[in-house]
Each structure stands twice: as C-alpha cells, then as structure tokens.
Length: 421
Image (cartoon, rainbow, N blue to C red; front, side, top):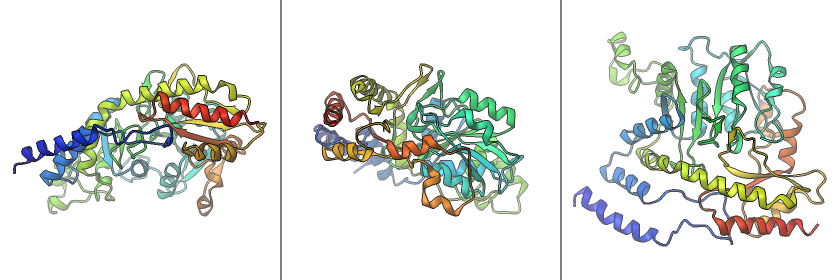
C-alpha cells in the first residue's frame, strides 16, 4: 500500500474518532489544560511516521520560520523544550565566540516570582541570578527595583512574562541600553502577548518560548529560541546539535577554514543534543495557525471571570490588566487577601473537591526553594510580593477546552465557597 492510500484510510478513521470530541472537558472536571490538537496535527505526524523521516528535518525548519515571522523576529531555532530554549539563550551569551561574552560570576537580573527553568540555566553558565520582586498587579518584574539591583558585575536582565502578562518592555529596554546589558525574554507562558501593540519576544537580544502540552500551542514537548542576530542564530544551531556546523549560515566558510577536517563531523562550538523531532515540527506547522483563535477564547473567559467574580474582591485579589497590554492568559490567577476569613489552602481544597484543578503561581519565590541554597545568588529587598504570592496565590486553567458552561461552573463554585464566610 502506498503512503497516500494509507493516509487516506487512516484519515477516515481519525475523523470518525474525533466526531465525539474525545478531548472535551466538562463541568465535573475542569483541568488545567486540554489537548489543543486535532486531525491536522495527527495526520501530519502520521505522515512523518509513515515516511520514516522522524528526526529533525523540513517540518521543523518550516515551523521555525513560521513562528519567528509570527513574533516578528528574523531567526528561530526549535529545540526539545522551553527549558532548553532558556539554556541555549544563556549558552549563546556565555560562548567565547561572541564579543564581550558572559563570564563566571557575572550577574543576571531576573524576578524571584518565576519558574525553575528561568533560574537554573543562569546557574548552568556559572552566572549569578539577582532576584528582584514583582509588581503586585501584573506579577511581572518590578522595574522600579532594577536600579537597586545593579552592580559592577551586572551583564544581563531576564524578564519573565508571567502567566502571559507582558513586562514593561519600554522601561526594561531603556534600562538595558543605558547599562549595556543583554536582554533575554522568557516568553514561555506568553505566546501572542502584546506590549503596546508589539509582541513579546521581539524586544530582547534573545527570546524563548515553550510548546509543552499545557501551553498556548503545543508540539507535545518543544521550545524555540528567537533572535535578530545572525551570529547568535548560528550559535543556537550549533548548540542545539553537538556543536556541528551543519545548519549554520556560515557553514561553507567554516568548512573551507578547516578543510583538513571531515566536514561531516566538524565541531566549532560546544553543544548538546537538544533537537526536536519531525513529529514536533508536524504539530507546530498546524498549531501556529490556530494560536490567535486560542488566545481569543482565553480572553473571553478571562473577561467573564473578572466581571463575574467582582463580589469576592473583598477577600480575593483579581487580575488587573492595563490598557496598553494584551494579556495572553496562560491561566487565571487569584490571590487570597491577608484579611480574608479563609486561606488559600481552604479555597483550593474546595475547588479541587469539586473537580476544578488548581496550581500554585509558578514556583513562587524562588529564593525559598531548597534547591537554590547550593548556589550563589543575591536578592534585592525582602521580596515581599513574591512571598505573598507564594503563600496566597493560585491559578486555574484557561484554555480552548473551557467554554460558557465550564467558566460559569468555576464562578459558581468560587462564589459558593466565599459565601460560607
């Protein structure tokens, strides 16, 4: 049987299976995420499997171009995870092949309220994270503390667009320019978010995104590094795959320079094996076209919750969104006030018992995590907001699987709980 005939037969089976919408959620169980892929992604992946070309290839390269264009950047390097995209970004800046590279002991400013994969790559390149607090409304890095975080060792700033809310990139970029700092944007939770009409991930020297299963679009696992700097992009290509020259734009020049070596195994940099598969690329080239519609669903849900939950604001702080941003709503965060007659654990237990899944707001204050105590870092101030969010904050899911019935059920249960006090 030819591949086309096999695909036609399989497609009919997939269409029949998907008629009953097996990925749908319901009011009895509201999960943090739901599969956002459909027939197109499944068939593209099967096409790769049947062709037997399953390692990184044309579909990965196509998705790299599509996603970079969507964000507004010149170059993209897809990797196996968002964590790896942060690692490669830091490794690029620490690579001796770039001018004025990071050295061991150099400092990188980043928010304390973040996820582990923002911080650990900083440690991996022997740099020192400098933790600053967050703005209480946006939960992103408090730019008013950046000046106090500076030292003679400061070399970069790594803002995090937490839960899809854009950081104040005007301030950050001006601050970086004034102090000759690199900027690495961690956009892993912020696909399509806008700061004053411009997409996050298009401001910094480098930016990173995650395509894990629970993110705005998914390649199952996966991530990408974006940049406008061709030298950085070439390094990303080498770092992704063993230090090879294979995908670099200056490949022929390097081969000629080292003509005494076999060009098939020419290593010009340190490197890892962080390559994605064609299955991931197959998902990506179809997911990217759905992203805007997915964000719209999240916006509709969030607008409803902000309005419908106004009655609980005496006890719970709701998200505040400025007019000059487009929030991508990775989740919907709530913070129980110190004056509330109940604690976070109480409302979480109630929601979970009623089938509404919740999560802490990332890792909370990273300086409180035991794994950080073995490394060098410093902090600015007391990090009161990050600690408060860690103690009192949580979020529930906001994704394309949540519609009118689901979002109303969530409100019903929150109001029901709050009314008991």
